[in-house]
Image (cartoon, rainbow, N blue to C red):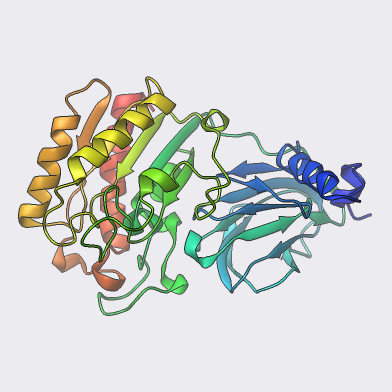
Length: 348
């Protein structure tokens, strides 16, 4: 017997208000574990944009599927009982079989969005289907991380084979970026708030600030919708990682960077009082720009519970990802150093 959203949630969606209630019920369902930021919609769906946003659930049976919609082809990764593979979700609403012909029994599924927020809003319709029974949601790990970053954190081009390739969903994934690798190594949940090309003062290609900054977007549930404020009480990280500056310094200097970073740091510390904050030097900056970034951040790190981490630069002999970004080798090296530091500082 298939288990569906309608059978588990007794809400008649005969009005926009009723649909919103149903979507809120989905977010609060005891059968789903949502990792990241999800927004209830008026069409009985929940929406999500940030890379690394994930849905996790358990079921008893032999097969399961999810109903999703996206505005353009969008890359996901799904794991069934720890074994993962790629999933491309196509435009418009469709049902996607994530597992079938399994041995009858208990199974665990995790679906992760790899695509960045500028690829559009993804939506999930109701609870997963199964030929058996949805079980209570998997237990959350005890450890939580929040990372605020740009293309490096989003995993831009990490799977590319050289600096000569351009951005593509095919070669980009936050799961293979340093922060995603760190979270997996430490068995921690992670909220990845990252947008390629963004800065805290200005974005890539801007002489003066024009586009919304990461300081503004980090406050949103849906990264490009300023009518969806994020409630920081919903997620309390054990540490906040901030890797921002590559794009502010795209011309080698960033006169507005110190003040903008100081303001964001104050806001982050207000949101997460007493939580350690780690600034991470950009692995893509070199020479004077990297020295300047380090100097600026070290001035801010004089406060308690704020530290500056140098996880290393890209080494030419290790190669590059697309458009000069860190590849898998560089990200693994960065993750190893970050894991060691967090274990030492947090007792993990």
